[in-house]
Amino acid sequence: MVMLTTTTEWYLDFEEEYLSIITDNSFSRSHSYGPFQYNDNEVISVQDLLNDINRAFGDRHYGDENGPLYEITAEILGGYYTTDGVRGQPQNNFAIKYEIRCASITGNTPTPHTLTSFRVVFRSGPHGFNTPVNINEEVPFGEITIRSDMDTRAVALPYSTHINAILDNPPVPPDFRIVPFSGVSNRLLLLLNSSTGEFDATPVIIKETDLEAVVNQYVAQTNEPISLVEAQEQINNKQLTINYKNDDPIDRYEIFRTTTKPNSYADFAADAVPYRVISGRITMDKRASGAHLIDDVQSNTKYYYCVRAIDVHNNFSNPTHVFEAELVDNEGQVYLILKTIYFEETIERIETKAGRRYIYIEPSLRNLSYAPDTADSEASSNDNPGSNKLNQTEGDNIDADCWDKTLKIRVTSKKTGKKVDLNVTFKNSGVITP
Image (cartoon, rainbow, N blue to C red; front, side, top):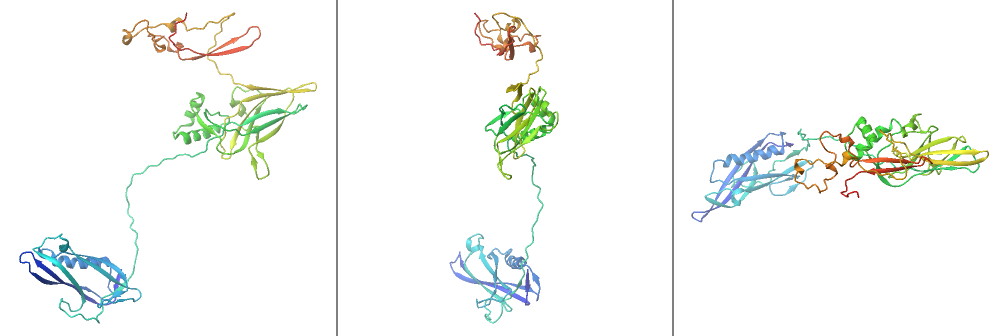
């Protein structure tokens, strides 16, 4: 904003030199723009002052095909300029430097005469180009106040929101060993340490709160939302997997123990809390990844253990295998019986058949039948039809199909009771049985 300190009445006087494009003769012409009048102590903006000057140029030349077209810009300078060109420096005052350009010289406006040059005189009071210059007369000046206003505008922009979780990977199961003491029948030494590696596995749920943590890990790793019910169903079907990796130090270990042989890991959660939670310490303020526990037990009693690791971000690993440990005290002779327990899978149907020396296994006749459809009517009967064409006759029970399915066949010795398991997958190899 500008506060003019004097009453102003000033003009811009132009003298122009032309060359006639018809006679090649030179001639001059003068113009006077103004007056520009403002009252004492009147407040105007610099832009208003510039607009007044441009308006005066427009009023002079609009509709004048022979007149030049001038453009003017303004620049604020510190101090002010007097009529003799000497720049003064009064504090808090300003001057405006004007740059005037003529479009006719640049050829933007065609005229019947060519403008070759022009000069400008800035006057206050008596004007006209031939008016003598009074060097003692002050050029109008004023005090300037600079104000910066925010230009805030509401704009409708497209946006989206996305919620994602960033979690470290859960650790791999720890290294777990059970060691007896020599001649001691009521104590076991449990040694624990972190393991290394990376793999994908189906999470094992022990406590009720584990499922929510597994879902968060799954969402963080796959960026796919899933409900608790869907996650539980996929875990039961071994379809959901997450990545396990030791990318953080191990903070503690959860030890689960029971004296009843478990049928699943969920049986260890009967008490809703682990049997023991331990961590390794070098000093009071420094922890180690290795830890141990001296566990009090009773002799001739079977104990079942499993352990899982928890890192510094509370991510838990899958548990270790289940170990059956029994300290046998045979009248002072103490020894440890240690076994690895594998959970028995639920088998929907069990069929048995007696045999002697040899066992011959092959698909049933219904699985060996071939009924070609219309698309295969031209195929030769000697061609290998592929397992997908066998046992596909209309009305057959597809569940009875044995192809591309893995069946477990257990052979049990009637004499010793030893068992041998065979996992057999039936595929049509095209080899004819001799």
